[in-house]
Image 1 (spheres, rainbow, N blue to C red):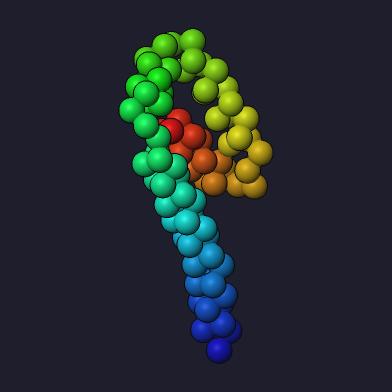
Image 2: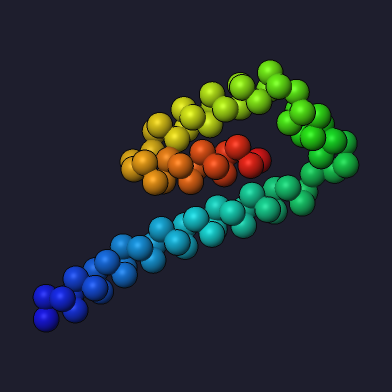
Length: 83
């Protein structure tokens, strides 16, 4: 009985994280679709500039450091750098 209860509790804990992550990715996709061609071009030029890369890396690392676990921090860092 304890094993079944443990499995149910672990399932409930992990299912909440999966839903929240997919919801945030859907919001980011919608924001990217709302950009016009000039904003997309400006983002592409910002990604090419090496100075902006280091500023972005520093900002994303600060966000990752504030997360509760290392795993969540790595996920947030990767999402931040992909934007």
